[in-house]
Image 1 (tube, rainbow, N blue to C red):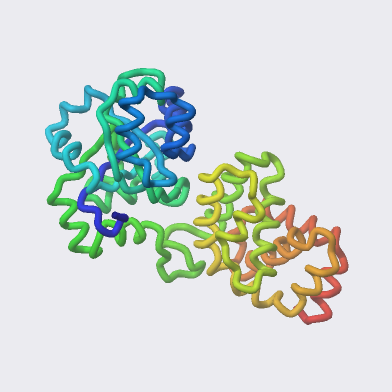
Image 2 (image 1 turned 180 degrees about the vertical axis):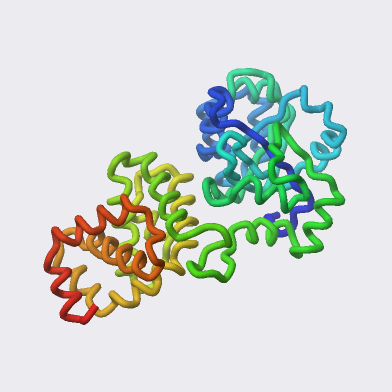
Amino acid sequence: MGLSSAEGILIVGLSLRNEVQKKNFDRTMRSSWSFDRIAQDLKPSDKLVNTLRSLVGGVPEFRVWGCSESERKDRRFLEWWGNAEKYVAIFVDVSSGSVICWGRIFAKIYSDELSRALWGSDEWRYVYFIKDVMWVENLVPMARLVKELGYEESYKPRGHQIISSNRVQEIIKRFGSIENFLQSLLQSKPNQVGLRSGTTAGDTIANVVKLLSEIVGGDAISMFLRVVGRIARGKDHDVKEVVNAVLTNAPEHVRIAVADALAMLRQSIEPAIKVLAPCSERIATTLQDADLVLGALVVLLTAGFLGGEVVKEVIDIANSVVRENLYAVMLCRLYNL
C-alpha cells in the first residue's frame, strides 16, 4: 500500500511560526516513530497497546498526526476519516509558503489517551499514522501545489483540507496516479540549469545552505562544498549515500531535504564534475580536505557555466578555499582546466 495506489488527497495546512503547531510537528512528524517507541516512551494502557500493535506493529517507521474534534464540521470529514487509509497527506507551511512533506496514511485511531500522550492534550483525538514520507521543504512552493489542485495561487489551506473526489479524479486522469502528480512537483523541466522551471541553480544552492545552517550554523557553506566535493569524487555520484555519509549526525528531515535538493542540482554540476575528472583523483589522494577543495572547484566552474547565478557568499568562500590550496590550482592548470 504505497503512494501509487492512493485514491484521495488530504492537505494539512500549518503555520510553523505558531509555537504549539511547531512543537507538535517537531515531536511527531519530524521525529520518526515506531510501535516500540510508542510503547516505551508513552506507556499507554494495555488496551491501547494491543490496539496499536495490530494497527502499526508491522511498520518499522512512521510519523503521527492528529485532527481535532472541531474539524468534523467539514462536510467531507467523515468520508475522509472512514477511508483515511486510501489518502495521501500533504503538509504545507502557510507561513513560509512551502510544501513541507507528504506521505501515505496507513492507519488511524480515535483516542483521547493517545492524543494526550503525544501532544499533551486530548484535542487531537483523530490520530492517524503516515509512512513513506518524503520531505520537500523549501523545494516545492505551496502556490504551485494549490494551483495544480485547481485553487488560486494565493489560496492558503488551513487545518485539514480534504480535496474533492472530482478534483482528485482530474489529477489521476492527467498524471496517471497521485504519486506521479507529486513527483511532477519535483521533476525538472528542460531549461538552462536543468531544474524545474522558475528555479535557478542559485536558488537551489541557497536552499541547501539554509537547510545545512540548521545543523552547522555559520559553517553551512563549507559543509555544502564538502558534500559537493564528495559527490565529485564518487564513481557513481549517488547523492543520497553521499549526504548520509557526510551528514551522519543531521536530523533525518535535513538529510532528506538536502539530498532531494542536490539531486535537482546534480544536472547543473555534472558538467563541472566531468571537467574536473582528470585531476579529481589526484586531489582526493593528496590534499587533506579534498572534499572541500573539489567542492569549491565544482561550484566555481558551475558558476562560470551558469553566468553568475550562484549566490555571492558561496562564490566568495569557494574562491577563498581555492586560494588557500594552490596545489589544486596548479594541478588544474596542468590538465588545462
